[in-house]
Structures are given as C-alpha cells and as structure tokens.
Image: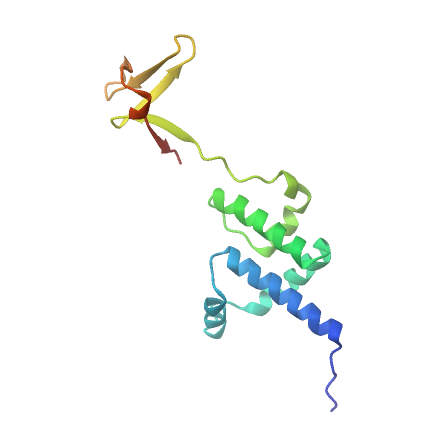
Length: 149
C-alpha cells in the first residue's frame, strides 16, 4: 500500500491548527512542556481539540484572528470564574467585540468597617458593627479599598 504524500499546504494547515490548539492551552496557563507531558499521560486528548481548532481557523480566517478571539474569550471567562473551551469562541463569536472582562468592584473600608458616601451631605460615613452610621473624620489616605467578590 502506497502512503499518500501530503502537500506543503496540508502540512502548513496542520501547524496552524496545532498553533491554535497550543494557544488555547497557553490561555489556560499551561506550557508546551506540560501539554506534551499531559498528552502522554492521557490527561489531555490533544486530538479532541483539533477539529474545533480547524473550524475556528476557518471561521476567523487567520491564525492571528483566531488567537485574538481565544484571548478575548479567555479574559472574559476567567474574570467571571467560568471555564471555557475552543467551542465557547464559536458561541460568543457574534458578540466578541462586546465581550468585556467583568469590572473589578472595590469598596471603601476604614478599620474593617464598610464605608458609604452620602451624595446629599457630601460626606463619608463608616458603618460600625452595630450598624450605626458614624461620620468619617479621618483622612482620604486612611481609606482602604478592597475588591468585592
């Protein structure tokens, strides 16, 4: 039986697909060495990702655009604590330009007590353990801004 020889174009397409699959894993925080090691241990079934990568390449039109789309979805999903796959890029394709990472909300605290800004009185208030609103008499630098989940 004679083995079919692949054309230069087919070989190039395979490397483009590999590049997209590898970029997907990079966006998940894996290195090339980890990908190869996990593939050998059957933790990652690499071939499972080749078909969606090929479809993404066709949809995007270039490797560069496909990588940008993966990055955008990765950023969006990780900011919301979501898992994502290459297929998620297809599902979000029409809204890619509107996908934005979740904004980080920070709230003001003073000595571990939440603070509230009163727009009408133009003052900061500190809410203590007994839910009393105490006028903030400290300096702006004393306010600690914490990320709220």
